[in-house]
Image (cartoon, rainbow, N blue to C red; front, side, top):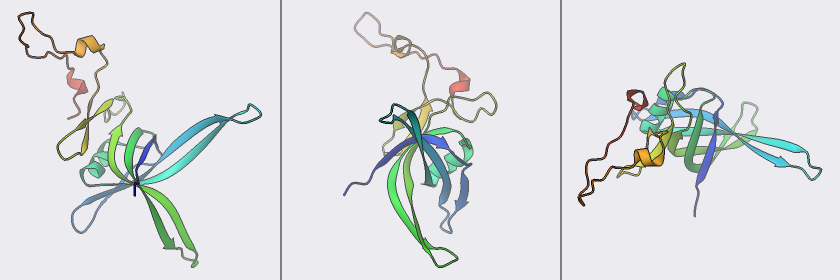
Length: 165
């Protein structure tokens, strides 16, 4: 079976980080996604969906460090049904998303400097890390080649403020 969810939305609350007895980090938060559509009568409507999300490991720690309520993120993960009995004995349930990868989509803010425009970078363990996206034209980001047939070392104009660490 296939269970994959990809969502883009804004955080509805600050991340809450805790650690399991094993030492693994767990972060809980939620995002809101919206869909705009037109009814048969031509009226514009908007539907908002609130989704609880859970992040684990280093991704949880990064989310806790860099994300706050209102920040835009892209998450990929799997849908999970959580079931419990409330204090009145009623059975309750909700769907949540267990996050496998996360990308911060907000540009660098002026007030806290905690986030940056990002593009995905895959490493050998298939964990996604965020790297800065440069706002130059594609020609400015291309490696420069010499005319003798050999390749020279690529030159990039990188501002220290664009480096996330």
